[in-house]
Each structure stands twice: as structure tokens, then as C-alpha cells.
Length: 221
Image 1 (cartoon, rainbow, N blue to C red):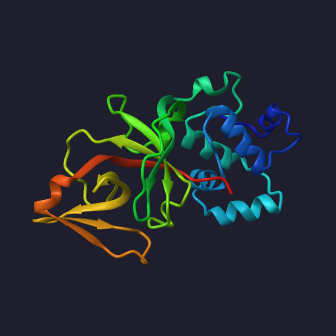
Image 2 (cartoon, rainbow, N blue to C red; image 1 turned 180 degrees about the vertical axis):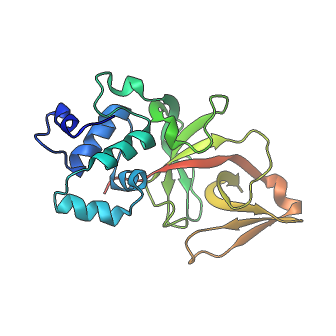
């Protein structure tokens, strides 16, 4: 159990502030951590975190425990990120999945990126995952331009209604919510400025599912 005195272990003085906590989590997990992700781990809004950072608010012991549980890490252990349950996935740095009107794949260059499995919805070591970048604003505020998206590759299973998928249609890539009707596939955006679209049963074979979005890493700022 973490004691109050444990906060000194990382040489932050007598207390730890939220911006220092973000740096510590990133060091422990080797994943990009921003205010939005910290807010999610603490069950508060990003604006709350932003305000507390501006006010140089200190982290409580209970908040440290919540962070450790969320990221599956030991903040003050000596073993660093090796204690965290980490998986390495392919990050396609120059592949942009459109959240707008569609975009092309710029390249297929990739790098391995360590990700805490606790971040991935329904994680299984038997599933294949990749990370790509989002482009456009049609899925805002759920997904913003520049966010990183972790994709669980499609394995032939049925579309889960109202889940967010990456798919290719008419040689363009999209990130949208999909639902299946009796004779059509419904394509929905979270941004109300974008209309609902449908793909008829006749044209359904032209839709190529790439995978389901199982995690979103918000861009910094």
C-alpha cells in the first residue's frame, strides 16, 4: 500500500503535482500520456485536470492508487515499466484514417510501440492490433484530428452495432460508427454536422472492414 511518504521517492520534493504525474506515467509505461488520458484514469474531465495544473494542484494518495490501477503500473517501484503489462503493436506513422470525407494512405512505414494492455478494450494476446492516426473532425468530440487510434484487426466477426470501425469504401479510408440493418449498413458520425450515410446490401461487398477502434490516445494539448 502506498504511504504518504512514498511521494518522495521520485525526488519531486515533498509532494507531486499533476504535470509531474503525467511525466512519471509516461516514463513508466512508455506511452504518450496527456491531460485527457490522465483525466480518464481519474474519472474527471480534461478541463478539471487543466485547471488543476494551472493552479499547481498536488496529487492525493487516492489519486495515485487510481492511476496505478488504470495503467497497471507501480508508480514508486524500482523496476520501472517492466512491471507494467505491455504489448508491442505496429504504429503506422504516416497512415491517416479519415474522420472526414476520406483520405488516402500516404505510406506503410511502421514502428513498434509499447502500449499498456489496460488501455485496450477487450484486449487478448490472440488478437492483432495496430495504431494509426486520425484525420478530420467528423467523429469529434470522440475522436479529434491527430488522435492516435488503436485498431483491433477484423477477424471475420459480425459488425457490432454502433461500434467505431476503420474501413475502406470506394478506395478511401474512413473511421465511423457502423450498424447493420436488414438490407443496409448504416454509417454514422459523432459530429452532428455530418449526415448519416448508408450502404445498400447490393454494394456491401465494396466495404472492406479493416478493424474496430478499441482505444483512442488523445493528441497533446
